[in-house]
Image (cartoon, rainbow, N blue to C red; front, side):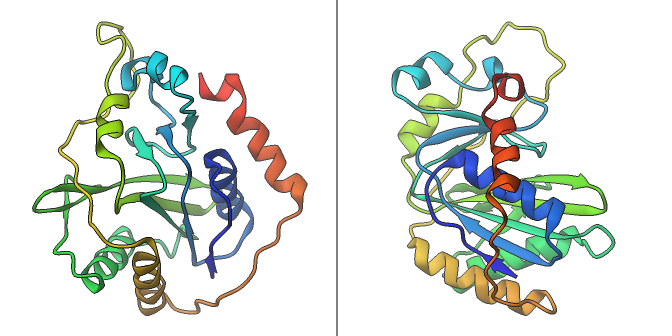
Length: 226
């Protein structure tokens, strides 16, 4: 199943990801974008990961996702992909091969680095994170296509470097844009997903509003974010 919800709200799309992981039979590929936002991993400390005062001043929301991994920057020049499968069927290598295949189709010479990052010669173009829940797996990541890398660098830095915490810290890396259009990348991901996973259908998923709202309320809550 290939799902492409509309809109640019980061919280709504994160709620969709959780819904797909918990309620929809796979394999599922979800493609989405959001307006400018910073998204931290489930086990991270926001004061160590980003410049919160600057983000508040400039109206940039902070979100916390349900998966682990490091902090990422989103804007309309970044495309997010999400692959959901049953846990028994999940193969990490298969998911990465799908994304690398898609990148090859748009002319990018990309490779996997540090177990969860995808790089080209100019730098990191994708960070990946994972969630395991109730026999299901969510494997998702970013793809920097034409993002504002200056804003990324400004927001993703510790505001309180001396704070003591057991939270998972992000590992800084040089980043780069792929320089391909969103539609090109989406088309390549759709084709690669259909080639690498059996039984993929193009379907319309229409969850009840309450199913998204309950997850959205959690993701937007201070208790979850902070």
